[in-house]
Image (cartoon, rainbow, N blue to C red):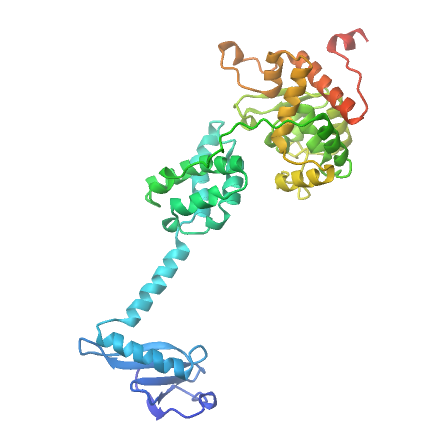
Amino acid sequence: MGRTATNPLPKFLDRIKPPETGRVKYSDATPGLFLIVSASGKKTWIVSSYARDGRKRSVTLGDLAQLSQREARIKAQETRLALRDGGDPTEERRQERAARKARAEAATLETLLTEYERHVISERVKEGKGRSWKEAQRAIRSVLAKHMNKPLADLTARDLQHTIDRWPSRSVAGSTVRFVRPILKWASKRHDLDRSVALELETPEGADRKRERELTDGEVKAIWNALDAIPAISPAFRWLFWTVCRKSEMTGMTWGEIDLVSGIWSLPAARSKNGRTHVVPLPQQALDVLDGLRGDHSANALVFPNRAGGELDNMDRLTKRIQTASKTSGWHRHDIRRTGATMLGNMRCPREIQRLVLNHTDQSVTGRYDISERLEERREWLQRLADRLDAITGGNVVTLQTGRQKEQA
């Protein structure tokens, strides 16, 4: 600290004025305790005492603004005892600061998602894979929100498991485990966390139970009519009914995928769950909606964007809004797809046509090639489905006109 004049500490510390230059050292009645006042106005408590090795040490205790005289005296006594016992308060504080800095800079579950996307998902996308990554991120960030910013070194399977087990939706909790487990394994191979965190994580009981929820005609009508009062999202949700597509396929649909002349929606392989291009012949009701939305859109513009122009997000909130308006409950978006498939079956739609409409994978050799096979039959059955929905909801029924009938007309 250099040469500093020492003065007795005055009774009223708040009246001490900073020197014009340099520093002034005031001694307290407590042995070894001093208050250093600098020209900048800073007032710092220090204690000087002999350490166990016989060397005299000076230890900074804190600023007068944060440490009162009484607190400084107590801390000075504790520090002197620690020095005599061989402790080093200065080094301990330095290590504590280093530990805090290391924790702040440590990899977290949030940064791990970014790294995994950069090193793993980006490569899978090049091969036409990784289509469920957005869904995975949403599930992980939602279910494991309280753990996202913890250092990976502090993550334990016990803490993650407790959070997962308490999640109200068993299916979502189970999906989260399946999504996060390979990510944690990837991190453990790079020694960022203990491998046991991934290996010990289990899906909660009942998470793998197959869901069989289907909407009744009454629920379909209630939901359909409730959508009239929510015009911002009604076309998107009705699209799920008309095309029995997956939610992600609808939210990512662009105008470049739509051919209004032929009435075809071509879902590219990169966005299709089975990695194959899927051709959807659209019913007239769906084409009418597109015609109403048609404008000066670029090919990359989303057909059903949110207010900011991006993909519709927070679908859980939108679903709950529809449930409240329709006075229905216990269903989610995929149940709409299951309901549409059931309607097709009840109308005696051939199972092969149902498979093609739903874009389910055909494992046979003959099922791997023609992406537009039996197109007119699919068009006919999707039109019948749309007409059936009109009959249930009281909408305008479109007279079905097959390709042959159009030629005759």
